[in-house]
Each structure stands twice: as C-alpha cells, then as structure tokens.
Image 1 (cartoon, helix red, strand yellow):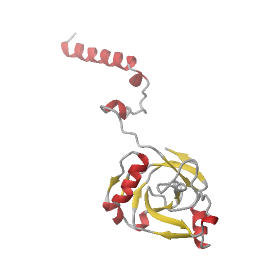
Image 2 (cartoon, helix red, strand yellow):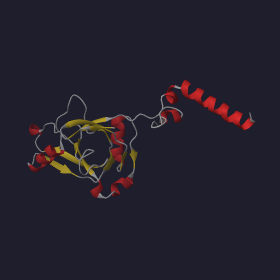
Image 3 (cartoon, rainbow, N blue to C red):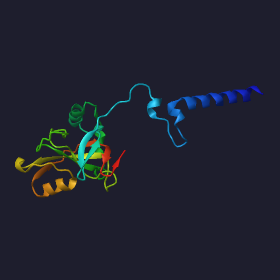
Image 4 (cartoon, rainbow, N blue to C red):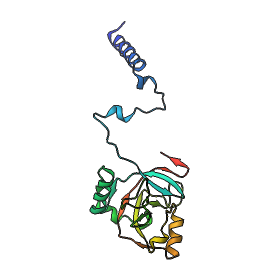
Length: 188
C-alpha cells in the first residue's frame, strides 16, 4: 500500500473513532449544525428574559440595546444584564419601528413588573403580525385616574384606553431593541 493511501485511511479511521466516541458529533446528521457552545471558550453570557404582554397573552422578550443612556441604565439595573447604548437607533425610520407601551403608574402586580415598577410592558405587532419589528419605539402611558387603573394586555386595550381618555401618552423618541423569545402562537 502506498504511504499516501495509508495516511488517508488512517485519518478516516481516526475521524470515525472520534465521531462515534463524542456525544455531540455522534448524534449529528447531515442536517445538524455543530453547537456554537462547543466552539466557544468560556461561559456564554446569559441575558435574562423579561415578561410582557401582547395580544392578550404573556410573552417573554429581551432588552439588548437602547438609543437613550438613561433608559439603557434603567433596563440594565432592572435586569442585572448590560443594555448597550446605541444612539443611532433613534435615527431608524419610524415606519420600521413597532410600539411598546411602558406604564408610568397604575397597578403594581405581585409578579413581573415593567421597568418603572408598574405592570409589564404591552407590545403591538408580535412576530407573524403586520408591522412586527424587534426595534420598538417607547410610548410612556400614564393613567389619568388611578382609581380606573387596571392591567392591560394588548395594544388594542391600550389604544382604546387612550381614545377614552383613561390614559395619557408621551413619546420621548427612545428606541429599544426588544426581540421576543415567545409570542402568541410562537417561540424561538
């Protein structure tokens, strides 16, 4: 046997031995990708999920970047995970943004809360709905009468409360990247 063929055969045998001995490689098929964790050194960062509402259902999402340094600090302090300041997000064309409603007063639930200590954020346009974008323009909403304050769970409920004069809104021009992990009818 020629030395080159012998070397190729030895490499093939070693590769087969590695594939069948390794739990990750041994389970891979032609449609499976190698896990990224196996390619990285050290621990992968953990970004804690945040609870919110969309279309009447509880969802999970992340805060990753914000256009405003004060909002980024507030979200960083809230979650214990850094939210990066990216001022250029505020210059993203408005038609590419979806809304997130952030409550400045109202009910303080026993469970998950929004960044200001009141009910969780409410998202319009989740994935699969017209206008979905992970980039969200922040809309602060304030109950005009605390006695009528209640938990709202959809953009439609927030818009109706605004039309009825129950809520006032402020749009500070802040954009936050808030990709969803779960949403009505889906998950990553």
